[in-house]
Image (cartoon, rainbow, N blue to C red; front, side, top):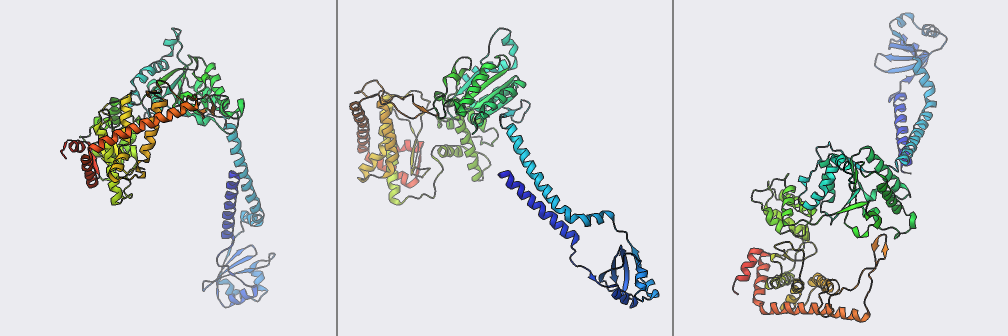
Length: 607
């Protein structure tokens, strides 16, 4: 329907253009006056005519005053003989320039047949465009089952990415180094009877560099790199996905040694038998074809299949068995040293101030992925341009961290005097409780400037990367979360909606302590609420209730106890340090922002 409408529109435009040209050629703006031969003789006798052009039986007459006229003579006789019948003066006729022009045969035939040819030409254009659209659709039907993989040529120096461009991931690069060696020299392995893994699965959180690392492998091995997303295999029609899989592997075999990379494998690799349509589901047919292809090609033919996912738990077991994706390479979030290296790599093409300290920025970004760090550097460059500076500085990098974490500043969100006071005491409560407990991360910044959905925020960042967390850390974190709530209650004897997000986080953390971490002294070392193996399209939608109603009551009581204890801890600290709370809040109201060093001075300052 889309192409039909387009062809009709083009045919209509062609018709208008041809009609316009025909009108322009055959219809002059000012048509000459038509006169009789008797009138022409009178004008000649009165010496008013300067020139006559004879075209067959048509006479084009030009008068001495510049006007033009037309007349028609008899076809069988000449002009002179025709005019003699009208008593013309021969001497007057000699004073006129007579010019005879033969009528063009082409013009004659065109003038005779063009009115009949015009409709045929229009119809011809119309049918040509219609057939052209039909042929395009037919060609698309033939190419519908072709793979949509993008080929990255190893000779492309502009987009070349090597291991040196991928910071961190040391263990992953070591593990994948032998893949590069095999692609460079497969005979070395074949001579020893070694079989290189057919498939390698890259597993890690979003933004950790799975796609980037796969491109680096292809560049290091200097082989063609076929990249395709899992969703590009799946179409509305059954069989298209499996056809594209076959075409992808056939194309890669022609370019062997080569590397095939399937991003977001879980889009087609989810567990079978869980969706609608049974075994005839298009996604399942595509997965079946991938399994067949991985079994079918020779392990030493020079093709390696790389895939990436952040949901390995939903993949079909057949994909992960030996002989398919033999290896799983885990890509972790970068540690302190890796974050610093990533920041340096992403700042290569940006003018950075000589005083920029990437180590400090790396310390402020625990838990950030490589994509998050790249976003921080980019946001800092944008902020620098907005401030009309020539170099990216430390201040811009610090502000970009807060923008990535919390969102942009909402300068239009202006608090009233009372709301500003409540927000200041709320954030001061968080900060004071955090500074009073030994296992809480140090305060980096306190602000009552709105960012994102928050009216204010207290930024706590660890001094080092942590992989394990203790029960005492969680209990103190609960107290910090309730610090703003308690501060509002004891200061204003009133509660606001500002603590709603803190209460949600505190309740979730308290329930995890009981049901997931086994940190309840009363209920002991066990978990509650295991996941059922019920899936819909490959994803869990139910939680198994593996405990009784009586135990559910005990769980609720323990969750409440954790929160009540945290409330009492925060209340005790803020009750004893009311003057310090007021001091911090007053500074916040005045300056709106307190950095780490100033906050530490405030804590040491006598009240």
